[in-house]
Amino acid sequence: MTVMESVQPANAVPERATATLDTFMCVHSRDLDYLFELALRSCLANFRPRGELLLVTNDPDALRRRLDQLGLGDGIRVTADADWLSSREQELPGWYRQQVIKLRSHLFCGTPRFCNLGADTVLLREVEYANLVGPEQPYLYYTGFSWDGVRNLDFFDQVVRVDTWLYEKRRLQNVAKILQVRPTRAARYVDFIFDLFCFDRDSLIGLNRHLERLYGPDCFSRLLGELGDRDRTRFGEWTLYATYLLDCLNAPAAVRDSGSIFLAQVRGRRVLRRYKFDSKVVHFVDKRFDVDWIVRQIVERDLPLARHLGEMQQAAARRQEDAARLVSR
Figure 1 (cartoon, helix red, strand yellow):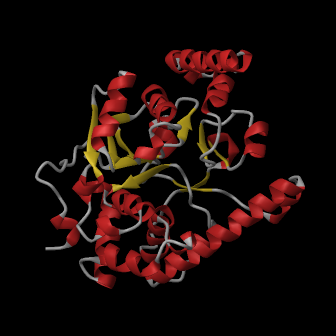
Figure 2 (figure 1 turned 90 degrees about the horizontal axis):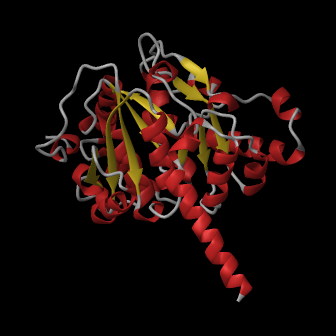
Figure 3 (figure 1 turned 180 degrees about the horizontal axis):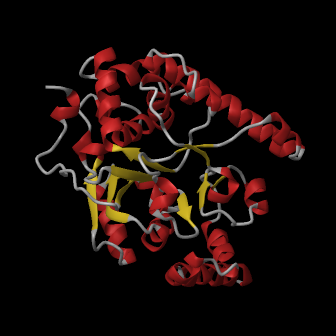
């Protein structure tokens, strides 16, 4: 029995033939007081092909309490990280644990294709099935890069974009070594970081089996335990999956540039202040952003998500009033 099979609980979800997409979020307890509520409300409001919604967390009790406080618990399944990890995998750093869970998501998602949404990623506008899945396979989204395009940016954005591309290029090279393949096709695209990532069930199962053939049945704990957590370019679940499809399988995958119109990566405060909230999806990378300010921008621009944020807007207004009273004392 493989590790993948040994961690499968009795209530693992059977595959369902459907045009909808099951969706899951990996939610650490520290996410609960940051962008989690906004990300969750945006998914409920704007993810049109949504099937079952599953939240995987290190603290199920805290997450259920938070859902109850928000009045959003109905129809959402909560499960623990430990339900999907072996005992050795549970000893890995938290960043790696979440990646293993994502790579094992075929065990708890029942649709032939399913999506991973980040707990700091917000759907500002409606996302349709056709945005994520082509005629045969889910789209492999990447963030396009060209030196001509970089020259058109201001100096700060040039530095950020080049650094990001080099960072992801190192990740791609390291992932290719893990897969024992030359990343000929994947190297055309490099940056596969996409925080509304759509997996294909059969392809994900094939990737797990490939890694088990290379590294044995306990492949993730063995592989990631040896890598350490200081250099995060040494592994990446989405880059691993994309490189497996493109270069191990040489599959006819549909590859798309995410562009700034579909998904925007907002990496710092300077970028946030200039962001126009004009994409369908936005990943707020920095963990120190002002959530109330983000909510105000969504409401002031009257985005489709705004009408679903009444409670968040009211709470933000109360916090602003409380802060003003403290200053006036």
